[in-house]
Image (cartoon, rainbow, N blue to C red; front, top):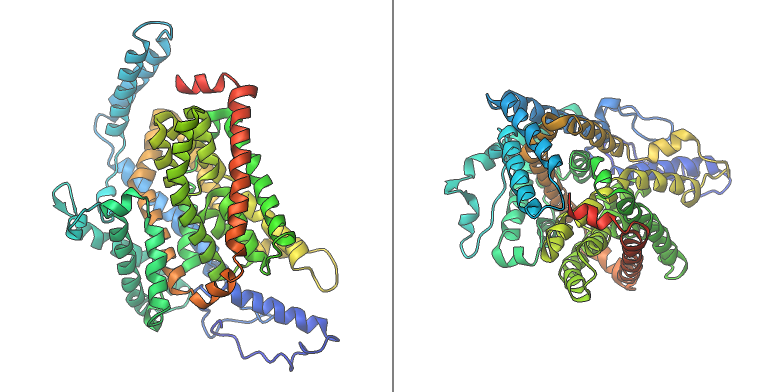
Length: 546
């Protein structure tokens, strides 16, 4: 129930009578809002109510707008701190980098020393870029590291304790989120108490994920975060003081907008049309086919669960699942189940696929493109590619980044489909633009804007490239990972095993994922082989010499 809404009597409003379809629409619209806002900050009691029973929130209290605003503030702070901390000899370093670039272009590919000279110059370029990239905030935005037998070593990096930086990270996140709570009319003190507990659970998730054996099998923090939340919510229950800070959607929306800083459009140019075909042609085919398979063959009772699993598996895992869940108003438990399936199968695939690539001899480029188009997590894609080779890693990560660009497009398409066909109007008329806009996850526009802006900055020579590197590697990536971890803990705290039992009783969600991923594996391999071997046979050799 959303605070601030008066009790709703179905009979009083004519919902039990089929002769009053208008009241039914009011009720359904109201219920849809309450379902979609169950994890959002409650509306203040004095917030005005519209004719449909939905709070008329001022634009500055809307989650999507606040998430995008917060993400841009973080990026602005990162950029400002990087520019103010630039080395004194910045101009000289930039000139040296340009001179090295000229020397690289003058190398003769057929010469005996080409490979050695090229590696030497690239190394020089990398060293210059590292000197130019100022990251003053990086040492204060930390998380626990790796450990073997003593978990206390996770809080020591380079022989220095990270307790103080961790506290600084906590204080920085708390400041911004408490400010958001105040803007939305909630108590900052109550939120701070809950956030302290939530942050500790996220911290513990990082510690568990950093254990040497656990890390070897790539059991990432997301899995532990969800499990810790589930353990609490399904045993002692989520305490009321803690639930105040479980802002699942807000955390992950802000994190996804920040992800745009890592998904740059220059990635499209790195592989050209072959990479685009693998990432953008196969993905929608697999998504639509898997969804139709779930509806007409498996006959899954929940269309929203079907859609979230299909998007999670075909696009890019958790990020796509969250954006799609917002578009189709999926339940918390449905989103959590989709994420759980994705994490489990990702671990299996990142171990099995590199073995298949090496055993089959398909090559690093085709193998990398195949893994990039099928393994859900970006981190797991890079890890799997590394097991094959450096080229496979670069190709796999690039294909996955190209695929990530589809997040907003897929969410928009799902929003239109859901409003038009899954939840049709009672008067059989077509939905208007405002209804689609209401359903569309608007934070994806922030994701796209960040990606476009930073892509433009990066294209402005070495100065732009190092500034983007400072922003991403020095600040936004760390903040984004904390946002996601907090969101995963919140998902667990808001989920119920009984709901999982209902959804998994028939085994249909698992069957859907396996069948959809099988199709994805086949089509992605065929497209990678066709593009890099037949249609663009020189693309692989060109990539290897870049």
